[in-house]
Image (cartoon, rainbow, N blue to C red; front, side, top):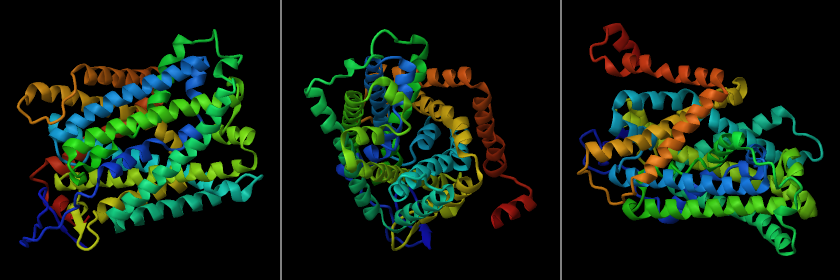
Length: 464
């Protein structure tokens, strides 16, 4: 269905025509990718993790702001990497450039067999739950109906990303504006309540209960809520004028997301006490029921659109990792082929589909996410450590955008602290996740490293 394409976009079969992905990601589309993947269901459903571990409303708001600043530090570090290493692929590409193919393959292996299918399945399940909720109110939604709606949503996202980059980007912009509208529906009435004098300080749990022992867990929850700022780096080759647009898109997106998160939490606290927020299963729905009356039925629909935006943006970005890994020889050659007419990496898009559907219907997705949550921060920390390493090993590398050294150092230390926290708080699940990722080492030597494989193995791999 396509041709294998080299890094410069030319066909590999002797034809000198160009078949490439094209530079279709403008500044606005870049902003929509970042915002659209960061803002998922979390801010609408359960911001209570930070409140629970920080111990007070005021401290929880400080944590939200601090996590936004730390995430900005990480995003700026990735902006430097993206403008000096102009190859798509995100984490995989940067680890490959800094530390070599073996560590990059381990990251790729963990992504492919577990992390990404589970993450996509979880956000898709949230979509299925919330898109059906208005239809079944006041009853609960049957679990099988949720899974069927989820399967349809995953299929539609894969189809959209396979058919057109332009329409994928356009729909992502629409979904991003939809979720910003949903947040505005919460913030505007909340600010009105604030100006009427209903402040967060009126909550009886606001003062005197700051828990320093719980602060690391509060930061862990906050950093998870902001995760997604790195997705534009997965599609660097498709960004128009990346030296300008990547840093600009990152800074604008992080400013918007941080403001939205903080103001949304302030709005929640003008209507609910800390106890009510902690008792709520879906904070935005509780807020809407208290303040908006019958209009609250629209909130689950907005949450579903928000989830769909995260699915769409994540699939668009992650497919480019598999495309680049195939080009580097770490995945089957077919994944680096681009559809001749659609100009999309169709095989790289569809590779996640069977694993995601399998985990949706037979896997224990939430346990798998617990196993893998620390691996995300471990490898992001390794990437930013690679930035510091490249500063010394390749000082002459062109860096159109360069951040002060303290920014990657602070962020790198934050990542490794969260990894240590995972090891300390949940050693069993963390150990299982680490063991799953380590299976990438023998896989690397079997499939990639050995140039002189036995003939029977070569024949078998060729057929596969």
